[in-house]
Amino acid sequence: MRYYIADCHFFHENLLNRMDKRNFSSVEEMNNYLIEKWNSKVNKNDEVVILGDFSWGKPDKTQELLEKLSGRLYMIRGNHDHYLNNSKFDPSRFVWIKDYAEIYDNKRKVILCHYPVMCYNGQYRLDKKGNPKTYMLYGHVHDTYDQRLLEQFQEITRNSSRMTLATEGREVLMNIPCNMINCFCMYSDYEPLSLDEWIECQEKRLNNNSQIG
Image (cartoon, rainbow, N blue to C red):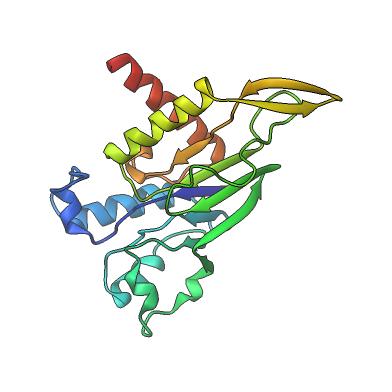
């Protein structure tokens, strides 16, 4: 099984009281909770793609923490992953470390970047039933005003924009697909999720937000 998660920010004490306002009394409590949620979901042979900003900790502390986590780990570099640049850090816990990647997950293309890519490769691709064949997974913006803007952009793109698609020898006018998912760890209660689980998580969250609004 393959899972995804973004912006764990292990050791980042400021996020307890600023921006995220995470509901923990200490960074130690937060770290322990994230480790517990991770290992209760991820098995040894599972894959976890980390979409950046994994740790604010020093190289040695981050190294110790990585050894406590289950799974085969893949890293999309975030702007706060400074430990990766330290010569004392051993990156071998990661299968690979990249700034950007394109992979396949159950016959669907997945675009991976710490930063949201609003016009991503394969965006218009649909299967014969009209289902998306490509998803863009990102992090970075947490649950901020920037995320609200991205949600508005997706809604406008899907509902107001049109494209002509050649299919089965004919041209069809249809809405432009836009399938971007913020894999922010707080959206999943700090648990890595599969692509299908993230799709469901986003749908529920946006539906709940629209009902509240």
